[in-house]
Length: 301
Length: 301
Image (tube, rainbow over all chains, first blue to last red; front, top):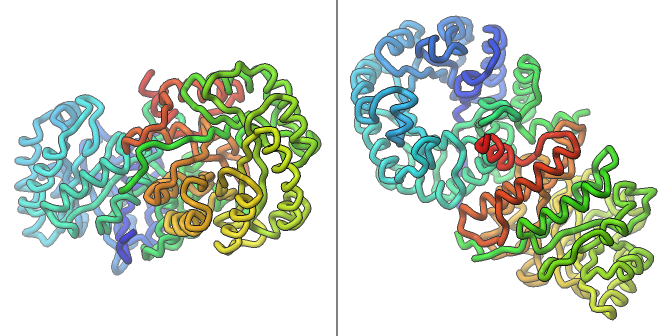
């Protein structure tokens, strides 16, 4: 195995995780989670989303979350900003990084953001221009890179094309999302390689969901390529384990446990990370979706 | 990736899984499970254990289970037989395969079977001799191959040594068990390679528990070596997900899902397998520990 010596973990639990919660998550629980993640050593934390609270009510208090966060040297908080209005809010909050998101599936784009892929990309151009003019880094997300709930198969060529478009408009990195967690290691690696071959390894990140239990194996397969930017969510937030259509993120604890074992540096303290996970799952009133976190808790007695 | 074209899956749910159940599992539920697994295409199914019911009460009805099973061409049921008494019961039941088990950890051997590793191996010699004289194949298990709950680190050299001893006395295959699920892919691959280099690839099998969420990634790493015999348990049986010290087996559904995606033939029908898992977890009154099974159930509505 030719794993990289170190990887950057982008912690998406506070956004991609909590946005799927059925109940309201208190502001203080969100802030405590993000602070605890930063204290565990995570340097890149997705803290919220400036989208319409009509569509994503769980992210309605992103302004308050950002205002409450202690700023720490070396820790970057990012928010999703699908449009100029969102970007303006992010700029007002003094955020150093924002993210835009497109789909690799035409059917998903239509159903999820009500426009074609091309239209969504066009909308991002002014967002990128103004962000960059203000010294704000922009990350791009591509969803449905290994399958779509509506159209099924998604051509790798389309994933490559959308990734290239995001880089062309100024995204410093593109995170490839297996939104419905259907990918397996061979296909994940081939897809990631096709993208990295075009936009560069250093611009390629992975965002795998664990719906079918494949996320960690998929990451392992792609580490071989030298990809060194990985998204995950503490406690596997992002899907209730026993809800219909459950689709949690790869658990950061399980990822860090593997990377520690592989000797790949993450800068994250696993015990502190697991404590952050216990606190938020306790606040949510349900067990962690991270097996490593549950095992560590059992071991600690 | 240089995965093998096909693998043999040894289904251990009815034994290694159910033996850890806190409540009594009805005989009919066990028989129905094993029949359903065979109908799903599994050819190697561990059906029970002839150990003292004082120590493993869940396996006390193994004779009745075996008597009730329909015998199918090409399907092999095996049982654990730690001693001659157990072997006699297996022979009386007309079983074609039995298994013996040793530890790679001296501390675990003492705590778990109350003797040294060397003593446990000595005890197996007459079991192997009589089994082979009766045309019964014998599989060997080695536990704690990647760590021990009592002594911590386990030297790879010890795993190799115990594996060689089992082969020398006549085991056709040795299954390397990460009993407490602490392994990560690099270490798992190095350990499996060290064993396979000595006893041969075709005699090397893997038995990974998913305690820290690493089992599938560990399997993936080892597939590269060409290992083509893998143990798993339907529904991830073998540990209650929320119990202290939970330590379930790798879920067969998650494994088959990955292998299907990799194009590695298993002969197993994933939908039928998932149905077998739903039936037994329904009987046990708890959710499946297989993410693929839960996702398939959600998709089916």
